[in-house]
Length: 426
Image (cartoon, rainbow, N blue to C red):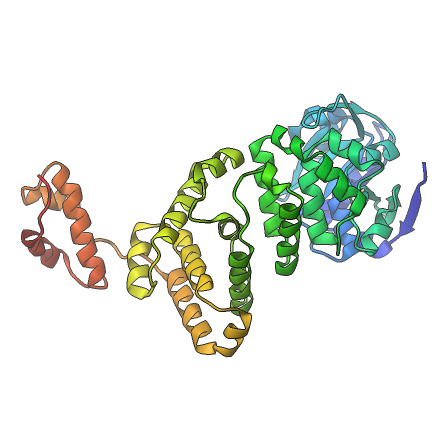
């Protein structure tokens, strides 16, 4: 075991009161002897990289039942979020902190493992995926580095701990994680890691669709534009993408969207970027739904987007107004961004065409600020006029379209009077 330590007192000086509280109650618990607890993983990595921290995770020698006891003694709500794997979530001031017992993993089959609780930080680090994720930080700002993670972080390298093939055999999701973390922290792919990913790429099909989907969207959400194109090109060229779904990636379309995103200084949603990446006229949408186990809401989003792409037309205020009445606002916003991006020639054109950029911004503002007025007609109004059965729904739809065409100016009496000229089914 080679344990390197690096003192960074400035990190400890910036701990939040909640983080300091967790350190205090575990280090000072006299009944259980008081034992070491350290921050671990992504939060340590990102603190060293000067990035914003999303989650603070702790590692400790205390067993799960001891963690719960200490939290309870200090009136901190404990949630057994992953107790089989030694993880207890502490809730302080509505913030969540995962506290996990040190462990080794055995009986790994690429998807599952059996945890064994231990009291050794080195072996806990050795079970992790990448060197930059196996860093620990104590309450005084001392960083513990067992696999040269700090050096790799500084040199912008994402490397598997030990034998890359063995790490992947333990959990095939690490193939996708290799690309995600490389996209964020590296300037090029580690060749040994890439070859191991290619060799074991068929293992992706053994993973749950939920895990694969989440990893893909985390990659898209956390990537800079240029690096997003790079990492998905690597996924395509290595044939790893083909292990996830059959749709070939459409880089030119994504490039156009990213150009527009840059010109408008906005952030397109990860779902829109994914849609642009995979869409073609022959796309098997059901296969995408199956392979990535999209939620019903996600399915509705993609079905809306793809049906509109196939029958696209000029989206002016009048067309957007009708969509905003009948569809979810974020659906319409993403469809407008998609249409606008695909009709532009490139970033150079955008830079030279400020009126066009201003026009796009204006319509985006209209979409974002749009509030559907109250429709002045109800089913009861139609029944009172002797309309029944299926004719009610048809009449509501017809009058609503008239109302929209009038820019919501027609009132109830005017709309009801217009019904006589509208043919509706009986």
